[in-house]
Image (spheres, rainbow, N blue to C red):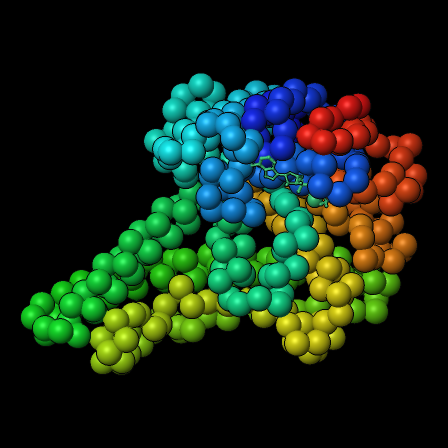
Length: 357
Ligand SMILES: Nc1ncnc2c1ncn2[C@@H]1O[C@H](COP(=O)(O)OP(=O)(O)OP(=O)(O)O)[C@@H](O)[C@H]1O
Ligand SMILES: [Mg+2]
């Protein structure tokens, strides 16, 4: 699939923009703090309904303005689609798919599929498990709407269960209601766990040879899905009840899941160098491209923000060779980072929120 055109109004530091994009590699270059990441963020927003950098919609509206508008025109298997997102500081964001208002965020998934590498993704390795769960959820939501709705329902049931736990700490009345919430949590959790396990297996399978090639066979990668519940989640919930009532919180379930990265047999969280972390994440993203292409039957759009810094020449050229086959938006501070630009599509210079071709 492809993003053919991007239109922005009052988005971050961009007052107005209307861009036609090339079907292969699009390079956005410019000094720091000019708006390169903002452009990629707007595309990610149209694909997933959220930003990778903020949960606060107002942050994305040009300082001092009341509204921002983002439109993405895409094409997939001969069909044209248009997504419009309107941000208003005081209301919920409004989303339109082909001019029809979307009632729920979930309707957006699948219209534009992207795989995004952002420098913030390095936190996936070093930070706590919530980053890794969020990453898994965003990817799986793009693949399956059932996953999205199961996830929503799981978190709704979890909230209800936690509310009840807090009440039970004061008054034991209605303790049997816990059975009802446990039953619901178990049903959703079983399906979500299966999807997560299958997804990580798929990524693992693809990531290994990619890292092998990327590093000239120097590094071996293993990615492991780690759930804090086994198949017997119902029993585990029951065993944890007294403790859960004491803390007013559910201690077991897929909301505690994690992913572990091992590089050459050691945990990357503790031992990977900066360059190795970057390579693992790139490898993860390139594997996602393969997996999404197979699952959806179409290539996603690849968004690469500042991917080339901190990588040695051979790793850089591996990436640049591998992005030729799909539509890519890549940012960098100077064109010398890219090396040979003869095969690229469009090259844009970004300066103070303005873009010139
Ligand atoms: N809501 C907003 N309104 C106006 N300007 C904003 C808003 N949000 C962010 N900015 C500004 O946008 C500028 C450009 O940000 P962006 O992250 O896109 O830079 P960049 O070109 O990717 O730089 P770098 O090379 O350092 O990554 C920043 O200076 C930031 O202050
Ligand atoms: Mg940037």
